[in-house]
Length: 507
Image (cartoon, rainbow, N blue to C red; front, side, top):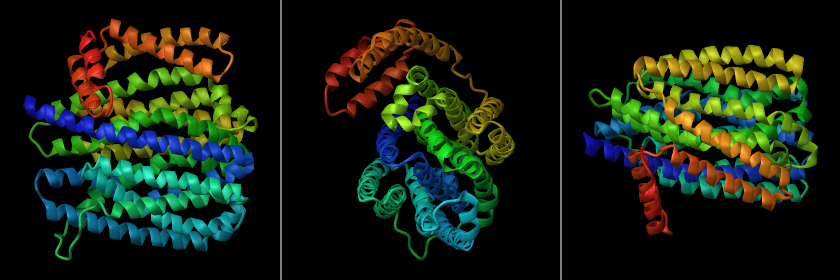
């Protein structure tokens, strides 16, 4: 059992390693992508680009019919049971269903041009690109889920790296040439096309004699609940921009988008760890009595995620103005008033991602569906009413309310089915260390004169944060094994890092 647990830990660490590289690369390119838009475009033009790309993200997610999550859930189980032909049958069905659905949605989108044009008050020609990108983006989501289901995180990383670099380069080039908001939209489309092209070569080859799957069971037991969950997710991640654009227009949306995009940095580690864990939790479901092992890894993932995000949250509180100025221009400085609350909401939402996706992965998709319905209803009711009353601030508080609801249900259900002990003791040590380093960083910020000094003081505060955690014996022997695995992947200073790791006091 211990040997088996060690193998799973190494797989989790490997998944997390490549997913972290993937999300880090995507985040850097995405930040430059939106930051360059903030430098080249006015708030209203920025709003047009943001609304367009969010529309594509929303509709392409709808088009996959919940099959993306279904693939990540069922493929590891089929592979664990050596049902290779069955896994290929699921892939073939998912690709065809997604293609048909995206073609249908794109056709409806074209028919709805006049209504969308008058409602969103955006240039007519911007809608000509979107139907094509919707089809490409929906297929791209399916292919991505296939790679995650096969736990080919390495291939996912390298294909993302190439496509996002292309997206950024084409976007900046088109904006320099004077295409304004068309630059980011067209650049986004090129990136989606390239990543789809690269990844098709990595998925298993499908033959005509591929074993058929129980389509009815897949659609109703897994895809339909996942579809409802996806709708809830896109409401929280993309719907804010669209709803705000509908109610308050492109300029307000553009300013809010800058703060929202920055706050989403805090969700990255949760997404990385959750996506690393999901196929492993699903794979364990195919074994006897997996609850204890599943609970152990969920606890581990939450612990590591909070370790990284709590100090970042404090940093976002302290330097919201400077972060906005670095990311965009002075025109967007008013976005700094949204960043602290959006950052808290993002951390809570990140915790809910780990908890609620694990509920699905342990074989309770309908429970997560119910959570999604409740949180989505609360978000729609609160976002529309609060945005009408308080503009972008109303949307900000609506997001926070929805995140609190999601975390509450996640904690209740994960304890109900797995009875795990949430890492409260570890969290208390993280908060103590974070607050001390935050106070020091605050005093440092009073004497910091420029960006270089700010970075230097932040590095010092980070070392103090780590030192206090070590003194409080936050690190366990299991953490050391994970750290050693990650360090051994490093091309430089392996011996030095391992020496330091072995000297760390352990609880």
